[in-house]
Length: 259
Length: 218
Image (cartoon, rainbow over all chains, first blue to last red; front, side, top):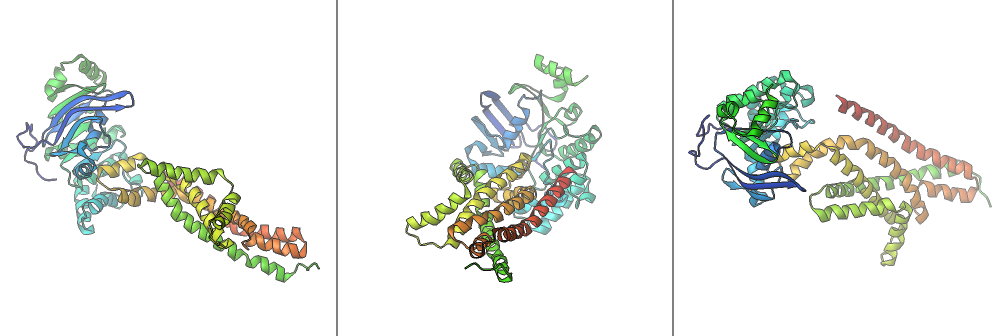
């Protein structure tokens, strides 16, 4: 990861081109209106936490950013490249956008090291030696270098998720998406993953994180987004968002998760 | 005049096993190539590809193998292609195996969790590498047992080629029986030879199935 021009900061567009711009985005699953008129700009280096009840569209929102979901209306621009303009752009942008999934989605037939080396070699054309070195560097960073030659099934959930983070980092992404990265973990493993994400945030990575870990949001987020029924209901800085939510729906939601 | 069934007749039947094996091998090899193409077409994102593959599968699933052999043998003759039974049988069985292996392998590809493809897409991995490095190796593990199972069906299926005059194991039995009139002995031996070919494969399929079950449980 390169040290971005705006480490840990608010962003505020001063870094030039925003990392992500979503404009008038709408998405339907059949008759279900999954995303309603979404407008969102994410500055480089900014960390955004997205929360909301299940089915609110928060996962769909971030999955649109690397086009795992397509949208029916509106435009999405990532790093200055308009995704909604065609498949070529999609391929280009996916290389630069890392994603971490709830279910890890590691490749079970490959070792941890091979998991981390595959994309750099196949997509970027990195040599085997370089891919190996990069993989080991990031495994070190997520604090599991000793597991490099094991298979995913031999690791705990927390370790697997850290491998998934390392795998994404090996592509040297400009932006990282996290789709409920700790929801499938046993409680005692949540922190090791969150700590890894906090490290990453402190290094200046642009991050969009769907999570209910409000402690993480308070600590790391520049902005917290609350979604409900496909809409962005409220956006705020963590302090005001948690202590003084403006909308009734936000208050209800925060009440439900923080008892 | 009726011939005695003796050692010569026995060896004539045994020697025909090679033709059964040769036909099975050709059909299986061709079927593997065709089956992979059909399976990939079936899971393709391109609609016309998906539906043409489906049409091929439906045709071969919905008609008897014997009719498929007749169509290959007589159909090509009508078109003016002079064709010998060996080629007709090889074509028909290859097409048959392609359709069935295609359908079996489609199921195996679809059994690989969607998340594997999503992870590949998210990493920017393209179609070819996603298939070759991520999806197919995982599908292959699931596919081994049903594929060997189908191979057993295919070997037994080659017996139908006897009807269009291809001299393999079954046809050899018929020839000997016509000369010796000892059907029970002759077809007893023919059946035993099929069993010797197929049984080890069935055992292998069962063992692999069990091994896969263990492998996925951990």
